[in-house]
Each structure stands twice: as C-alpha cells, then as structure tokens.
Image 1 (cartoon, rainbow, N blue to C red):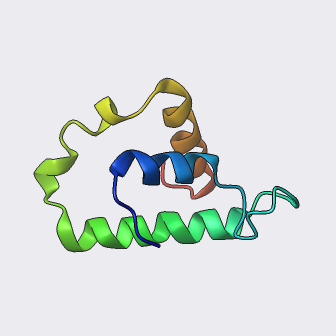
Image 2 (tube, rainbow, N blue to C red):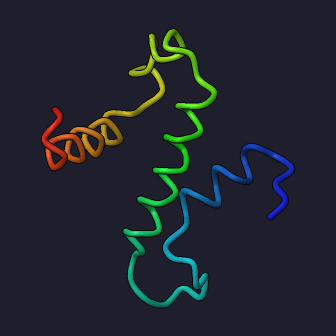
Length: 77
C-alpha cells in the first residue's frame, strides 16, 4: 500500500473495520490490536522518551477513555 499523504493514512485507519474491506462482517479487533502492536514496536525503535512529554495533548477525551479502558483491562492503569 502506497500512502502519499498522512491524512489519507489517518482517514483509512479511522474508517477501517476489517481486512475484507467489503463493508460486511464484524469489527476485526485482533487485526486492530495487531496494527496497534506494530505502532508500539515502531515507537520502541524510533521514539525518544522526551517525545512522550506532551502525550496527553495528542488525544481527545473519548480517545483517552479508550486508552484508560485498555490499560484497565491490561491491569496496568
């Protein structure tokens, strides 16, 4: 997949439901977690600890709620 603009990738991921891309079927939670895992591995390799200083500024309240839910289910927050 060739992505030419950040906005295109962001829009694709925001609207993504599953890898079938047919509008049918249920949300692919395993696929979504695999994508999140890949992003986390990328951050481990490339981000500096100081990149996380303003982390809360990157998220809306509903997104923070989802992160809190994930952390609670992971028993880390």
